[in-house]
Image (cartoon, rainbow, N blue to C red; front, side, top):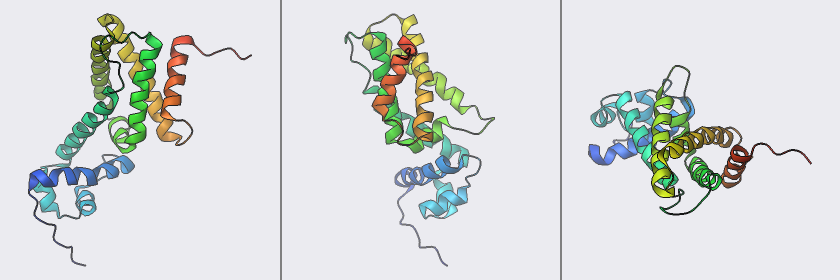
Length: 196
C-alpha cells in the first residue's frame, strides 16, 4: 500500500505535529522501545520528513520533554499563592500539590514521559532537582518565607507530588487530584491520625 504524501508544511510547522505524534508512543512504550519509523508512521509522514525536522530520536525526545515540562509548569505555577498571600505551610503544600496533581490528571502522557522511566536512565533525577529549585523559588517569592524554608518546602512538595503522580497514574479514578493533594498535605504536616 502506498503512503499518501503529507502536505508540505515546513519544519517549523511540522515539528509540533511530530511531537504530538511521538508523545503517546513514548508514554505507552518508553524511550528505548520507540523507533523513528513508528513516530513517522504515527504522524503519517516519511522518515526523511521526520529527519528533516529532527536529526535524531534523542533530539526529538529532548524537545518533547522541554515542551511538556513547560506546559506542565504553566499548569502548576497558577496554583501557587500570589506574593503576600498569608498561608501556613500546610496550605502552601496543599495548593502546590493540587496544582501538580491537576496537571497529572490533565496531561498524564506528559508525566509518564517526564517522570516514569526504565531503570538506568537518570532523566527523572535531573527533572526532580530542576522542579525542586523552581518550586522553592516560587514559594519563596510568593509566600514571603525565608529561602531555607522554601527550599525544604520545594523538596517536600516534589517528593509528595511524585507519590501523587504514581497514585493517579497507577490507580485511575481512585482519587480526585484535589482530594489527594489535601490528604497528602494534611498527612505530611500532621502525621497519620489515630483511629477513633
